[in-house]
Amino acid sequence: MLFVLAASAGCRMWPFGGALPGVEEGIASWYGNEYHGRVTASGEVFDQEAMTAAHRDYPFGTRVQVTNLRNHRTVIVRINDRGPFVRGRIIDLSRGAARELNMLRDGIVPVRVEVLEWGMGEVP
Image (cartoon, rainbow, N blue to C red; front, side, top):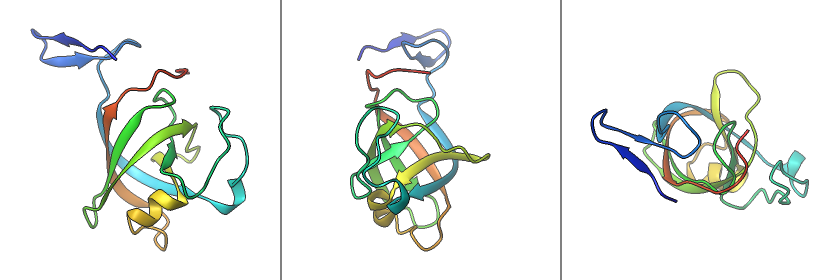
């Protein structure tokens, strides 16, 4: 995907308008058993052990690196669903991704989400 560099402003732009929201920090949660085998918003069947996540805004197929700010563990996931739908949360991870971040017991943790590659999927 092609990015336009705004040299004078010093910020990258993404092809869907506005400043590139490439890094954000907030609260992550995870989902698993209840949704395993169901169809996601992207039309893909949810596999709770896959390295996937739900995000409200990022296009489907976007790859992000998620860092647990409590223990600094990281995981790379692909956005294939919409959510989370709980106020104050920025990403909802699959059970497999949550396990990699060592957050299964806690349920929610502070994270940094960094876009590695923009997907070409639908944008709300």
